[in-house]
Amino acid sequence: MRAEYYQAIKSEEIAIKLDKELGAISNKTFLQMGYFGANKMILAKFAFWPNAKYTLFVEGKTLLEEAIKSDRKNIELIFLRYPVQLNAPSLLDYNQNMEIDRKTLISQVKSIKDEDLKTRILVFLLSEGKLTEVERKAIQ
Image (cartoon, rainbow, N blue to C red; front, side, top):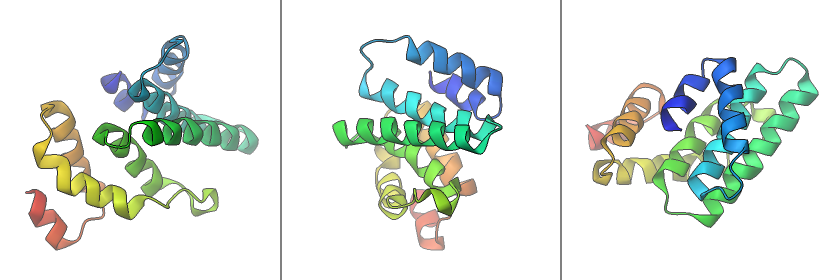
């Protein structure tokens, strides 16, 4: 799921495939729900019509926020939300948690046991995470 999601960011075909796969799961875990929502927001990026873009984004945001609310300590869910909030247009008003998400990711990244997830978070934070010099040094 994680690997497909990161491919979906650049491929509409993979995003559609992942949407079907996750949509077919009837009792999703909170992590699956989070990926389902984040992937909906990726599909919004590929949609042509503004109304479709907005509808997919809001649907995805709702799913991701519900997953985070249900599993607040899941760092992977926080990591799904942070890049979306960094890159979402301001008119979508989806940036309320950027500061706390960045701080949470920075404070917890070194203790993550899943090496794949840890690497993905570190690479993102160092390349696109909009870190201060102090924050950058803290995770290097």
